[in-house]
Structures are given as C-alpha cells and as structure tokens.
Figure 1 (tube, rainbow, N blue to C red):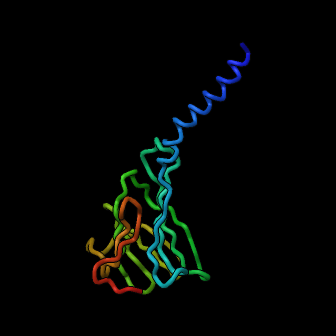
Figure 2 (cartoon, helix red, strand yellow; figure 1 turned 180 degrees about the horizontal axis):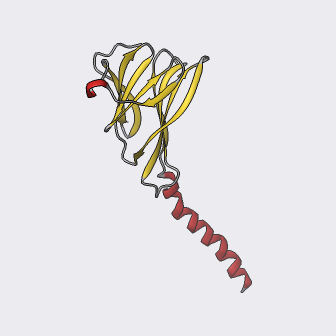
Figure 3 (cartoon, rainbow, N blue to C red; figure 1 turned 60 degrees about the vertical axis):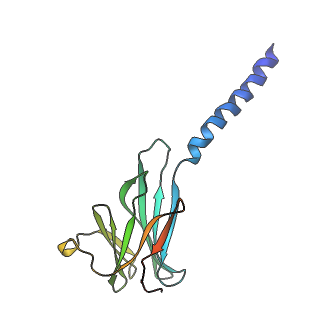
Length: 149
C-alpha cells in the first residue's frame, strides 16, 4: 500500500510539470538589433515578460558602441502584442524611436536613451527601418531605400 503513494507522487509531479511547461515557454524574452556599423555599433530592442500571466512586457533599449560605451535603458512597458517601433536617423549618432504614442531619442556617442517629444510631432530625419514581427519573431526590417551601413 505504501508503494502506491510513493509511485503516485512522482507521477503527479510529472503531470503537473507537463501542464505548466507550455505556460512557461509562452513567456516572451527576446531581442533584436539595428546594426549601425558592424557588430559593435547597434541599437537593440529587448522585451522581457517575467510570467505568462503578466499582461505587460518590460522593454529596454540597449545603445551600444563598443568599446566606448554600452548601456541598457528601461523604456515604457509594452503589451504582450508586439508593437512596431520605427527608427529614424536624427544625425550625429542619434536616432529617434517611435512606438505608439511614445518617442525616444537614443544616442550612441555616450549610449544614452531618453523620452522625447519631437518638434512639431514629426520625425527629425528619414526612416531607417522598423523593429517588427517578421515570420513570428522580432526583427529589424530596413526601410525601402534606406542606406545600407
């Protein structure tokens, strides 16, 4: 009789783990990069969802120009539905990022990112590309006619 209980415990644990596994896999944790000049100069969008039941995804922009600087800056949270983020060239190692109603200014001279209100509500320069879902995964998609760096 005691053997039944000993066997039932592990079976119950395996059943419980198999039911939870899909929920844990459903969490979003990913990143995608706009490579500015090779692998050492980039703007990276990072999205992290701690638990599957969270309705918000924590977002970060990593401004990177190695070996000079690299900084991960938390921006406003997003939803579990991926929202495109447009990237505009603002000159002098600056880029304007636009996601929904929010604008950010990211610079790789000192690797800084901040909230920003564009003058006149318009982008400061040409569209370079967009962070978006491509084939179900986050990717940076260059704008048509954007200069390849």
